Image 1 (spheres, one colour):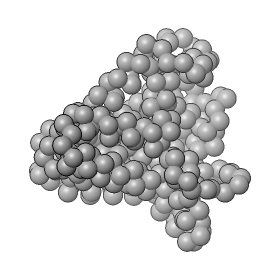
Image 2 (image 1 turned 45 degrees about the vertical axis):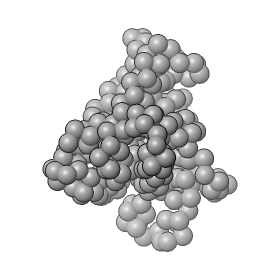
Image 3 (image 1 turned 120 degrees about the vertical axis):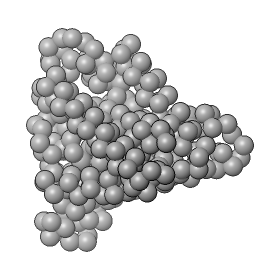
Image 4 (image 1 turned 180 degrees about the vertical axis):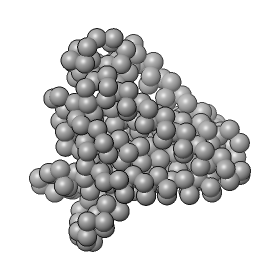
Length: 260
């Protein structure tokens, strides 16, 4: 949300941005503004990591409760990933599946976008979902086994930092709805500050102080490469690509953090 302070919009706008971000990115009963323009969308995207922190805290708390209740680590991790999917309306998972199907089509950008909008999940999409959910669940389980709840929350939050980065410099794809609203809405300051915050938080997310920042850096770099490739492949940025960036970043962050 630092972009809002940078523009001197003030506290009411910051609160409005957080409310819009919560209404967009979660199932929480929070109402955003009646109309949303690119200025409001910019604030909501800038606030996405705050939503990620809320979701991450909830995920870590649920995982802790499940383990305390005697649930096996792997099952607890899987339930936690499922709960995150429900809490976000499954839209990031849907975006991952659509993006994988689009990338796997090997057709021109127009055909790839058509496949992504078809509504069904093809073989590439199903495979991507299984892999991402599996990696997240098993990584959460490994972290829970060592009582590293903060690392779980951080992984979820970093996934939303990837969204801020993606909305910095790419134009929207033709026919994009959400993508057209949020593409190129972020200043250089906002992604930089959120990335720095995530790197600093990473210091406290693993027994070895270097591992957390490495996990964050690797995950965000991987997400940046994914978004860059998708923009080239689809002719621009859209909401599905943002969803894919979230899920891939969460999976990679959690997986690398679980190595120690």
